Length: 455
Image (cartoon, rainbow, N blue to C red; front, top):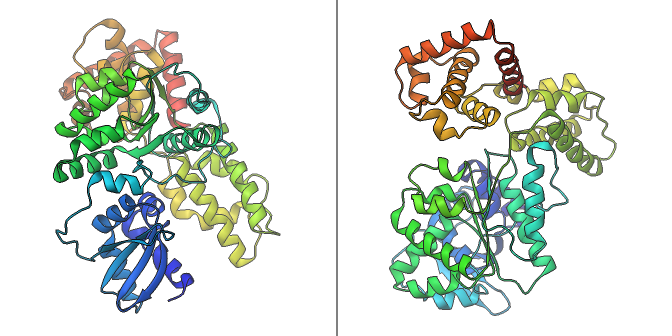
C-alpha cells in the first residue's frame, strides 16, 4: 500500500471521527509498513498510540480492510530511532500496561496533545470581538512574571479559543524551550487520571502534573459532573498556583455558567483574568476571509475572485469561523476544478447548502447573553429568581426579544428563563411593548440589540 493510498483512507475517516478528532489523532499517523496482516504506524508518543488504540483502532482497521488491505491488527511505533514498538490489537485486550512513570519518560514526561502548526499568532486575525483575548494571550506567551492566574478564555464554537491556546504554547516553546509546557484537553486530563488510578500510580500522576511550568487545559467544561476528576484538578490547580506557575484554561462558557462544576473550582477559575471571545462581527469575518483568500491565491495560481464575493460571504455566513473558512476552501477548490473565475453567481451555486444552513437562526441563549452584556448583569441573574429592577427589566427585554426574534413558543421561552410560566413571559413581553412606546431610551436599546443579534 502506498502512502498516497493511506492518505486517501485516512481522509476517509473524517466523517467517521469528526474534523477535530481527525486533525488531532488521525492526521499525525504515519503508515510505516503493512506486512503479514500487521499495519505498523509511527506515532509521536506512547500516550498518543494508546489513545488511538482505545478510540480509533477499529475504525482504522475497517477502512484498511475495505480498501483491500488484509489487516488483522495494528501496531504503533514510538520513536523509530530507539526501536520502541507498542503493539495494539484491533480489539484491545487486557494486556498489562507499562507503569505511568516509564511511559512518561518516553514522552519527555509531558503526555499532552499534539499542537497544530497552523494555529499561531501570525495566523490569528484580530478584531474587536477578540482583541482583549488576543492581547491577554500575547502577554502570557511572552513568558514574563505571572500577572494573572489563571487566564480563562471562553466563547462559542469556532471563535478562536483553541487557536489562541495553541498559539500560546507555540510561542512559549519558541521563546523559552526550557519551560515545561503541557497542553491537553480536559478529556485527556481525565483519561490520564483514570489510567493512573487503574495502574495504582496516582502519586506519579500528581508528580507529573505538578512539575510543569505552564499547564494549559482546553474545554474544561468536560470535567463538570465528574467528581473524582474535579477533585484532582482542584488540587493540581492549587499546587501550581502556589508555585506561581502559569495556568491557562478554556471553556465554552464563563466559569459561573458551567453546570455541575464544583463551586470551589468556579471560584478558583474566576480569580484570574476571565476573557470572553465574542461572536465575530462583519469586519472580523471579512478580515479572516481576506487572509485566507490571499493564502489560496498562492496555491491556486491564475484563479481570480470577483469584487464583492468576500463581502457577500462575510455578510451571509455568521455562524462561526470554521464554517466560514470551510466555505472559502470549497469555493477555491471548486473554481479550480471547473476552471472558472470565482464570481458571486458561482459562490451562490457552489455554497447553496452552506448559505441555507447559515441563514441566521437565533437561539434564546444568544439573546440572553447579548442582553446580559448590554445591561452589564450576570447571565445567571438574568435567568435566576432575583426580582431587583436592575435585573427584572433586562430579563423582560430578553423575553421580548426571544418572542420577537425566534419561533419558540411561550412555554419554551419560559423553560429557558429558569422554568418560568408562559404567563410570566407574556406579561414581560407586553410590558416591554408598552414601555417602548413612551421610553425612547428603551426603544433605542431594543433597536440596537436587534441589530447586533441579527447582524
